[in-house]
Image 1 (cartoon, rainbow, N blue to C red):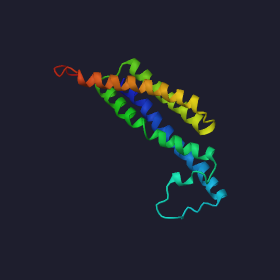
Image 2 (tube, one colour):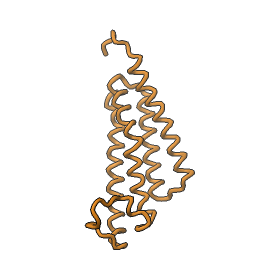
Image 3 (cartoon, rainbow, N blue to C red):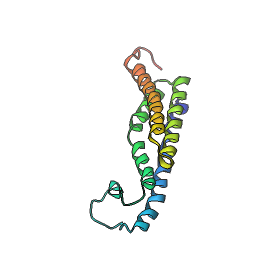
Image 4 (tube, rainbow, N blue to C red):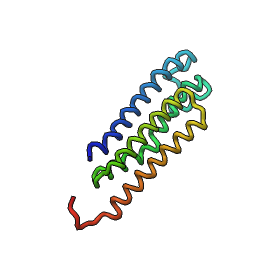
Length: 148
């Protein structure tokens, strides 16, 4: 069950890289069209592009940033659960989390209507809450006399 528990994390890593490529693939052409110089002022950041390139292009970057936020607690949670002994429900919850994050990404990168995006975020967060709970329960209440 260890590999099955880690597979959703691997999938989310791959998806994050896809979002990074999607961001670059849409941002660079938009920057060129807007006349934004890549060698511009020192210390420039992606957020400096707000209002300079179309919002719909920036949405991909916004989502990539989101994939670097909450998933940072997803990854250790699934590792802890995998190490301590995942149950089928844990694997299911991890795949639900990843599936909802991917749907959230596609929605935010294309349509970006906030009520739907927020609902997708809340649903994925509920899966994350379950995973965090399981990680705590498996570690805080582990029987030190039992060898796995």
